[in-house]
Image (tube, rainbow, N blue to C red; front, side):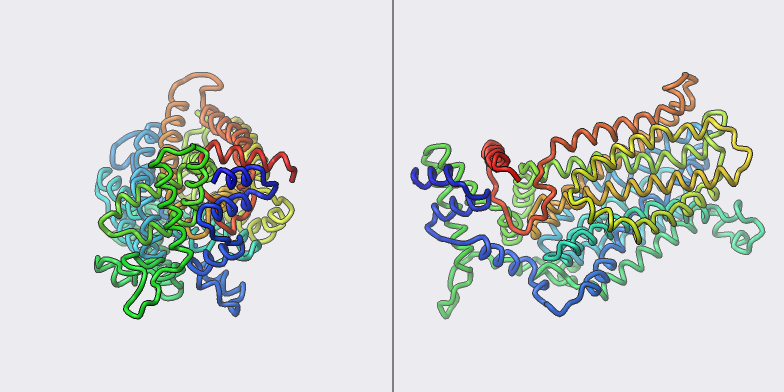
Amino acid sequence: MDSNIKENDNSSGSVGERESSSSSSLDGEMMTDNEEDEIIEASSARFLEEPTETTRQAYWKILIATSSVFASSYCLTNIFPYVGFMVVRFTGNTNEEAGYHAGVLASAFMFSRVLTSVVWGFLADRVGRKPILLIGCSTMVAFQLMLGFAPSFEIAVLSRLCTGFFSGVVGTSKTVASELAAGDATAQSMAMNIVSGAGSLGVILGPAFSGILYDPATQYPNLAIAQIQLFRDFPYLLPNIVSAFFSLASFLGILFLLPETLPNAVPLTTFLCGAKSTSSRYARVDTTEDAEGEGLVRDVELSRMERRESSQSLEANDQDDAVVEIASASANPRENASAELAAAPESGGFYKFLRVTYELWQRKDIRKSCYMYGYYSFISIYSSELFPLWLMAKSEVGGFGFIASTIGGTISASAILLLLFQAFIFRYISEAWKEPLSLLRWSLLLSGAFYLVSPILGLFHWENGHVLLVVLVLYRGAGSILNIVCFTQCNIMTNNSCAIHERATVNGIVMSLGSIFKALGPLCAGFSFAWSVNNGLPFPFDFFFSFILLAAVCAALAFYTYTMPLELNIIRKKSVSTVSTASSASLRSTTSTRGP
């Protein structure tokens, strides 16, 4: 054993070769990287074996899957243009004071999603991606209508809490998109671009449409719709009906047009009826032979079980730490996390969920990519909440005094710039800039400078309102473009941090962490802006304060990218063994000394 370890330590091969060598030294089984990749591909992505499926067909399926991301983002931001007016109506606050309650209402969605995102990702790895998407879309329909009919501030908050609680669509959609594009680097990049684009489009169109549709009786008194008593009694109903329609359309598209991408997933009807699953990605290990003596478990899976037992024996005997470390690395490869999760007995499901989540979180590349996604989620939602509040504030405190329809129109017009960028420019940037980390770093620096100079617009006295609208549309469009570039790189690095069959759980972790920051974002934006326009203090604590805070966070994240592993720039097509932090750092250091 010692000689094997020494051989591994002195090996001049790649990191993957070291791990393969250490695995074979423990069980005597020589398995090449290609053979292991074939096993992973066959077990976790069998649907990809159809060579007749064209890239165009794959893109259509990706669009269907990511329609739920659009619906979720639309649902999340639909409330932003009128949240201040809703608070004023329900609580009697002034426009300047509305930010305090508005932050609570806007953040309720994310606070509840924090509690369930990892659970939805865990379930998606067991019962399939499709049921989770269908549950999320159907509940968005119900609770958006509940928000529209809300008679009080408390009911409005409750509807947002319920919407977030059942929302597992974003992380699951990212998993489906990456699986549909697996094996094709170009398709993988474009799939993440589509996911980011769908989310950004929802973030833009949600406030745009709702700002136009909010309170039609007051905004459009001469139109026939203003005479409908229902919309007079419930001024927030119409924008939420539109939001519910998008969620329903996504539900129907997923139900009838999207294939299940998880092999051997529990049927949707069985899952909805609450029946226990009898199928999993791998068969449960009750015996290794059937009645005819045929093996029920593949030899490679038995060898991995033997490696786990070997590792446990070594630890029990308290042998040399280096031996235990390498044994553990071989016994717990990345692909086993989701496979063990899927094959776990029902009685240990919750323990398995906690253990798998903990093991994934221990990996530096996953942890760093999750942190970055969470931090940038704060920036994105903060700016989305801040922009309408800034436009709504009076000119005396650096705002523009816009009404909801003008705010919605401004945001809607800026969506055109984003769509043009997505369709004609972004792919060339992605092809020219191969490293997601570097592109993210420069995008964050540009975002920081952009937000820092933004409040200067509030210092001018705009005599021509049309010129002001054009400037604000360009401003919002530029911010949306920077936002989608940053989010796309975050999504790419998240998927690069893990194997394909772990992505549902990892994306669940990402969404849970991101939800924490997205819950804090509106609160911080609402409270900081309300405080800055009411405190009577000079620069930088006047209305500039919220924008300065946003720019500072962008700059801090740009420097944070230097601490992230360079491996996140590379698409991970095969699993990497779980090693201790010390071993992982040592291997990475050894690799870096060899040069690129």
